[in-house]
Length: 72
Image (tube, helix red, strand yellow):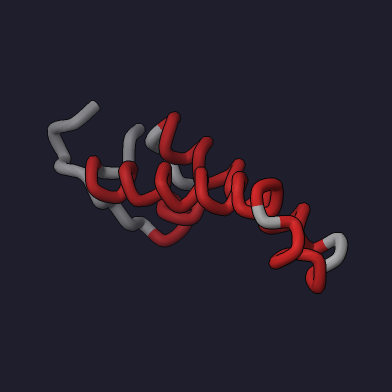
């Protein structure tokens, strides 16, 4: 069951890559967050996973679909 459309998928991939890479590439900017920078990186991993598998658990919970009904 796919519920993530093409535009949503691209946005998730880009945002996920930024959230995953930013704490690594800009450690001084994320230093005030302390251990929370790992939560930022975790959110990036989740965004990348939902983009890759095209399934968003939150969308399933709320009945949201950003793709056409005919897509499989």
